[in-house]
Image 1 (cartoon, one colour):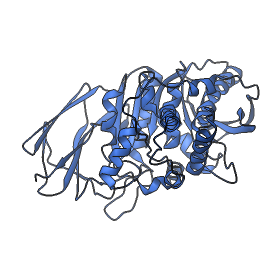
Image 2 (image 1 turned 90 degrees about the horizontal axis):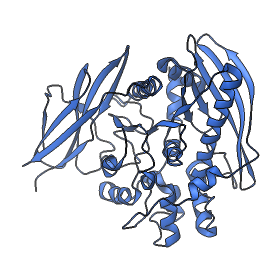
Image 3 (image 1 turned 90 degrees about the vertical axis):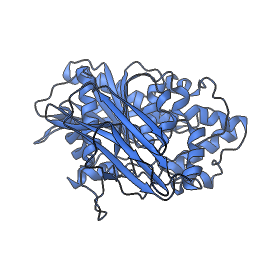
Length: 441
């Protein structure tokens, strides 16, 4: 149980960044140009097959590409729970590091909940590089290299995306060889910068990407998001120090810097990302302003759902009043599993709409859902400022729908609604956007 959680908690963070530009032009071609560029170093081979009490684990050695004379090698694991059969759609989770006990527990647990094979791609990105740099320090380094060279292949997100694309290539070839079965599409998922990678993989237009489930990457529409950070926190989040230290934030007011953020901001590609999407955020994530989703939600194309996890930060584990975190991030894992099941079975999750109506310090929230709910809740939190990172969320036990929430006497109050469903024994939840109410002055 603990190992299951640590696999999520260990996922590295992606900072909130931005550029200043009044108008966002069509997406630059650099991402697609890099990902589709032929690379003869791609290869894969089945390295191991292990049967466990929970199911079968395959391990594949993958070389996705050579990037600036650096060969990117990966491990790729496929977890098949007992009794499960290959499906035309497969979940592909991307993350850093290498396979270990915790990732194996997580992979098999997700596969059991989804009731289908699940693949984990490791080594996204290849690291450490350039004198021991890794994670955000490495991404910042590659951004600086782009600004210095104007070479559009430098931003690290591009080879990260290509890793996922080549992972799909390898998984399709593996399924044909090992199972004599054709895997046709994928649900791409990952957390933080790997959630960023999930967005950009869909942005390439690869038709095999059936859906995406980006976790804790609440920073689309970066020009607006950076202003939101300053409004909420008074300064950029301390979590993005790797970027502020390299003078990447605030972004220099240059043509090249603006293009850089256009190249890597999923919001710029929003018209191309029309696949179903499940967005999962922690309501106390130290990276993002609480209402970050509201800066891009309405711009997203296609089916979309959101889950907020109350009293949870970047690892999505809920904390009790004493600060003790749950061992398993139940809400996040169950909703991710339900989304994956829905895509595999071609049975969409319940449609859900909401309307906020605020007048004279009173906000009315009406929620409509197309399926039977097992519960409906309202979550609220209070803060002296717009910074809710350390706020305590509480369930409004007596809430009835349409829900009514009053602005606080001082400071700020945030709230959102949560609906609960049952999918063949799997309980999962969906949420509305949240609203922040300010005390009357």
